[in-house]
Image (cartoon, rainbow, N blue to C red; front, side, top):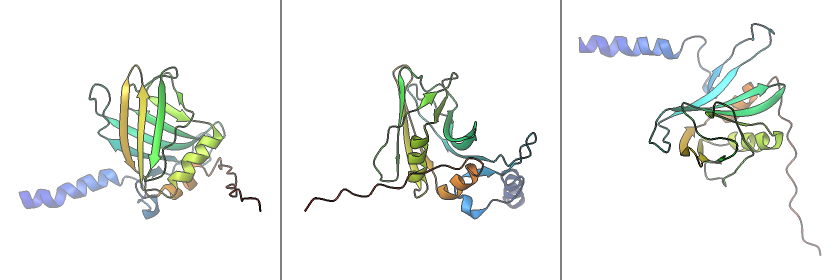
Length: 184
């Protein structure tokens, strides 16, 4: 019986995980659901990565996602959580990719107080620029009302995820500044 379960169980679970098209190895840790919008007929992929074991003020655990998406014609980064994490008046977010310096972007908490978005184009470009060459994302959402929520995402395949997510709303990037050279 154990041998039977050892063979059948992975096949059944594998069928659940790989529902639909086979995963592209370039996706890395990202879940990329390559759909066509039924209303517009345009590509409307869902591109996200999940983390489990989020710990908040009351030692709550749950799932959090980072989603790259087009919204109202522009690229945004969306962070969704299983529970309330803060508000616009008392909350903030800081993140760090791999060993790069931490960054505190301008964010907006949605009215469910579980979802945080980066909408500012420069902030999205900064996030994406770091994401494309990184393998880990550490993030903390801080709130006076809800305490700190910290989690870590594995984000390999970020460049491919960015390409897929923002195909319909390309991210305009500014050229990196040249270093200031001394006079003389």
